Every structure is written in C-alpha cells, then in structure tokens.
Image (cartoon, rainbow, N blue to C red):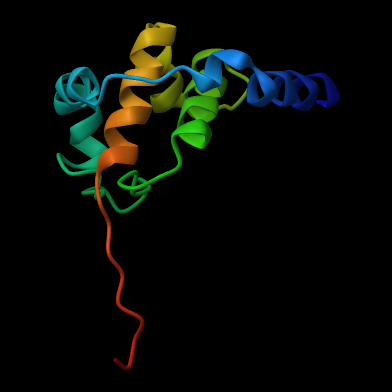
Length: 108
C-alpha cells in the first residue's frame, strides 16, 4: 500500500502534469464515454459519479493517471482510463477545468 502512495506522489509531482491540454479535443473525447456518468457539461448524471466541471486540471490528470495505472481502484474508471494516452488525459483535464461553475451559498 505504501508503494501505491509513493507512486501517486510521483505522479502528482510529474512535470507532465504541467502540460497544457487542448480543451476542444478533451470535449470531443469526453462527449462519448465520460458523459454517460459525468454529464455533457461535467455535472454528473449518475448519483455515484462526481461532478468534474471546474475541477483543478492537475488534480483531474493525477486521478485519471491513477485510474489508468490502477493505483486507484474503481472497476468502471479503471476500464475507461486504461486506454488514455498522456495527451488524452491532458485534454480531458483541460476540458473539465475550462467549464465555468458558479455556486450560490444557501440563504442568499
């Protein structure tokens, strides 16, 4: 288990995370398989799927790598991420990060 955390720490520190992705390419990629659970606009349509809209691209990229490399285990996400290239990951992270999200605190 300690080795998995060490691997995740390495992924988070990877210079490849700084690579800028192409949000348009990410949108095309997300429109198929990702949208089924995470929605066309990054707002989840499945109750057990997280919202990805407006998420930090470094975090998204690290999580996609962890799913792809099976450092983070989730049956569906491991399958979905298995074929993702570094460019795909950067593009998906750029797309979801580019979606603007607003929030209104309750009582306002």
